[in-house]
Amino acid sequence: MVVLASVSCSNSVVQAIGEQNPDVILITHQHGCDHAGADRQQVLRTLTGTCNNPNVCGVLLVGLGCEGIGTSDIAKGIDPRGRIVKKLEIQAIGDIEQIVNNANKKLKHIKEFAAKQKRVTFDINELVVGLECGASDPFSGITANPVVGAVSDRLVAQGATTILSEIPELVGAEPILEKMIKDRKVRECLFEKIEKYVEFAKQAGNDIRGTNPTPGNIASGISTLEEKSLGAVIKGGHSVIIDVIDYAKVPTKKGLNIMDTPGNDAESVTGMVSGGAVVVLFTTGLGTPLGNPVAPVIKISSNTKTYNSMNSFIDFNAGRIQDGENFEAVVDDCFDLFIDVCNGKKVKAEENKCREFAINRIGPTF
Amino acid sequence: MDSLKDLSDYIVVLEGKENVGTSLKEVPAGLYNYKDSTIVVKENMKSGFKIALIDIKKGEPVIKYGFEIGRATTNINQGEIVHTHNIKGAI
Image 1 (spheres, chains in turn green, purple):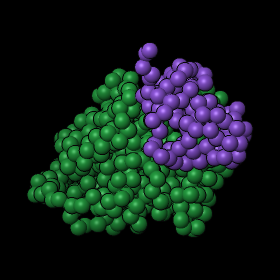
Image 2 (tube, rainbow over the protein chains, first blue to last red):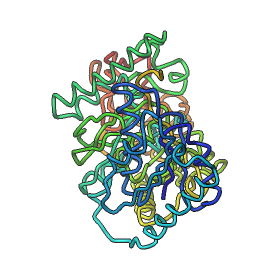
Image 3 (cartoon, each protein chain N blue to C red):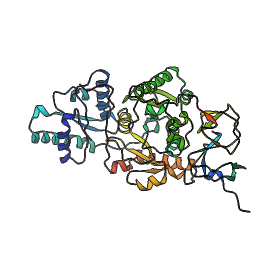
Image 4 (spheres, each protein chain N blue to C red):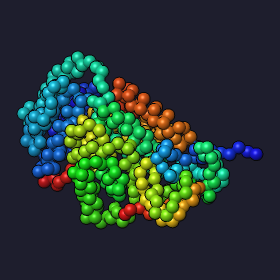
């Protein structure tokens, strides 16, 4: 059950509603007005996509009234099947007490609807799963990412959809990615998106291709740019890359997809969940609390030291491989945890109410 | 005679998919058991570095996790470290 601000001007009102309704999930953000063109479409798509995530059964949209992306714009794009959507406009009601009362009434309906939901069994092939790495260390590419890749391969083999992201991390991996893509159009689309980030970086004075691997990478054993990027690519395992999709778009083909997201963790995870990812597998070397408001983010540490020191935030330790455990056995356990989470087990990010939400912007705010 | 340590305890290799193993911890130089045979680790290795599991000829691909990460720029012997001095990427 979600209370979503359609625009940043609604944020404090959303917080006030949340104080009287601790059992709902609040989503506030920095956007919703003064966007144009493809950037506006992307912001709208991300907000709508969040509401359309299968994990969401009820939404109260809180709008100001005059914003560029209004509650009606968002509501129009929300699939009403299995979902209840309510709206309120701050300017239409005016008084803060009346606004909160109005919200409470609407949330009561949403909660009654939510209480009637029953758990049903469905097949793994219905799942869409996000793959992410953040706060990486030299072991991320050696332990945790290959484990996630193996889990992704198992899911894809059973008909599910997984989403690899973070395009800037794929720079240099083109020779590797080429072999994973059968469709020429998909390959061209991906390489275009990679080149776009190389150009952005150049404009900002940063030559990604020329300065990688960095001296720090080389000192920790990375020998070529492909190898560095392989550390990221391996999260997708060895499955064929079936499609490349825009930020916050819902995959149309089952299998391993690549979504155009930046390396920024909050924006990347938000994009994949808005595209329908119901669970995210997130590897980390140094540890990060990052979660998402509407999807469980399973944290997988690359090493035992971080698993222990950041245990409040980490669900699984792939550092067991470094400690000598068999790779396949660790993959088995990770897969089992993944299934448990799908069946309702809460992850640390949920227990800690880590609900980071960030929209990737592709244009200026006016 | 002390029994030999097993190199599998020190490196990660995806079965049948590569000609280098990546060290998970420091690997002191010396003789190790590996699969049905032995390997001589030619020099001390830090963690995160690669060791040739078989001889790799100049120009041949270096395969890690099932993907080619570059080509050997010189003949590499089994047990040698594979790094910037003997491998080059495509870029």
